[in-house]
Amino acid sequence: MNIADLLCAPVEVAASPLRPAQPPRIVATCEPPRPKPKKRQSYKPVPDDQRTRPYRMSKAQKKSRSDYEEHESKVFNLTLDINDLKQQVQYLLECRDIQVTCLLQTRQRLETLVLGTVDRILFGGGEKPRSGDEGCSFSRMFMEQSDGAAPPNGVYEFSLQLDKPNFNHRSCTIATTQVMVFVEEDPEGDNQEAAEVRKICGEPGGCLVEVVGEFTGRFTRQIIVSMFPHVLSDEMMVARIIGLSITCPARLLLYFNAHRTIVRQIAQADVFAALAALQQAKPVEFAAIMGAAAA
Image 1: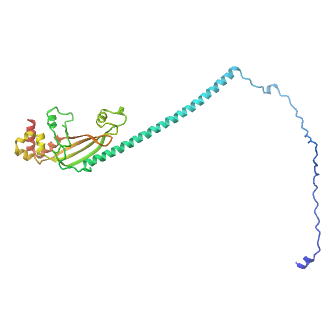
Image 2: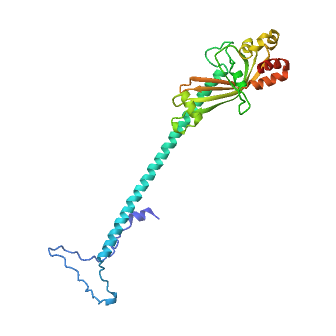
Image 3: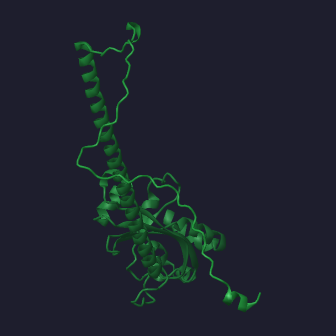
């Protein structure tokens, strides 16, 4: 295409397309709009068997409906009250479980502390050093019990006092250490043993700890004077008995109060089991001791 032809081309007037016919403009007037004519509705007659009549209840029906509505209201209110009571009961049960859990945790913590105290006492973990003379002391109660009727279990027991230095045990073996009785807050659930422990330990939180084991020691002159004074007339027999080793099954009972303080301590030993072993090892000395004791 030549640019000159474009520049020199005559101007052509484009034919304007025909505009579509516009609707006539509506001129606003002050006259109100004319309402549109309504179609006349033709009503058809309804037969009697198809006609809907208003329902009127009788007095009995009205009373029955009122009573039923009142009953429904009461049932609904009772349902709300029952649900509220169930929530309260559930809350109380949860509080009880929390309280029981706290009591169990407190009991376990106290038992752990008490058992730790017992461990320090038995294995020398205390702050105060123990002297070599501290130990268990026999008493004449053993001879008095042996002269009486035989116990039902066939084992004679006697109490040992842990504060007199006339019997030294150089070795001790602990089999079990356990809390036998724990003093609860409610005394109503106590049995006979728990009631006795409560009298000794006092306020809730105390406990009775049992330590079962055996100790091994040697006869000393104090033991012979305490238990077998009749052997003192024979100095040669006394010299042969002194130094003999004896192993006694022992049971230690420690009563603690709520402050982990020992309020009572009882040691029990089965000396007859120890003497039975002595009889097999040293029959002559055993015959001398027991023959004179029986006499």
